[in-house]
Image 1: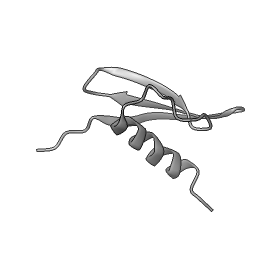
Image 2: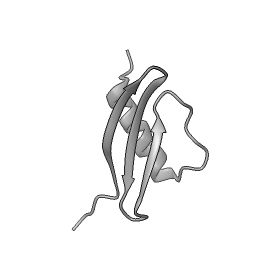
Image 3: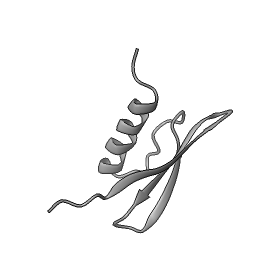
Image 4: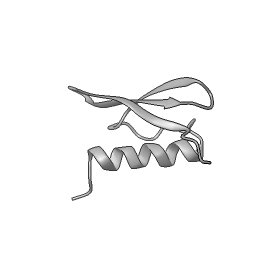
Length: 62
């Protein structure tokens, strides 16, 4: 049985970019990230991959 570790629970468009809230169920934390920002260095590899996938959903390559 697989479990979900990360899930985007909100997305909000602001003047300076799109903010997403990612819930980390293993850690019990809400992580708020701006999709226009560079990837934070503090993210673990699994969360970086999830962040990149979410960015591609909102800003697909043209």
